[in-house]
Length: 199
Image (cartoon, rainbow, N blue to C red; front, side, top):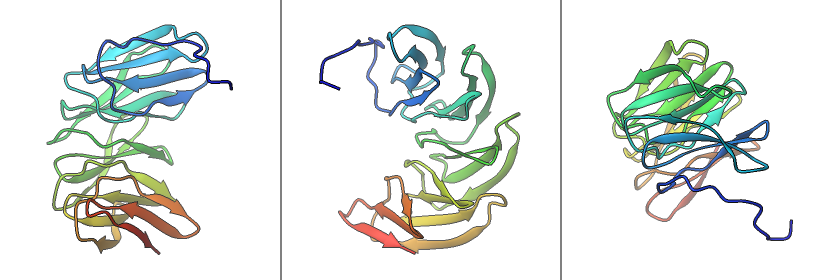
């Protein structure tokens, strides 16, 4: 790397989310509600999929589909090769949270305060878990446990297969950040300026 630009792509709208990369393709969404697939070497657009709301959610992919949320209250699964919708699931709130994939399930939080687990193949909802306030931040998964923060000031640890609460930790303010997991500890921030390490 030398800091020289290789290419740029004009998506025609602001981009708030982070991209996902798989097999030389970059996936990202815009505030005009479009999810793009772009060649990583040339910047050529392969396809775009239009949703009904802004996309703040960063996509996740399992090599078959790309999964992402939209302000239209839906989680989408789109085929990475064709750009065609495989399934969509509606929640009761905007899906600003970024999804995570684990063991043939995709997990995501919603502004309705729930964490949802869907089967990646057909979108069947396998479980839902209720927090007491909206979820804005990304979901993280490690060793069969789903970690997510809520505006109810708690970090939740949830069993990934059953959706049962393992434990929760109360902070002094809202949690918007993505939890990071390392060596048996979970690290996360809250709005009050604190960094927490919990085991």
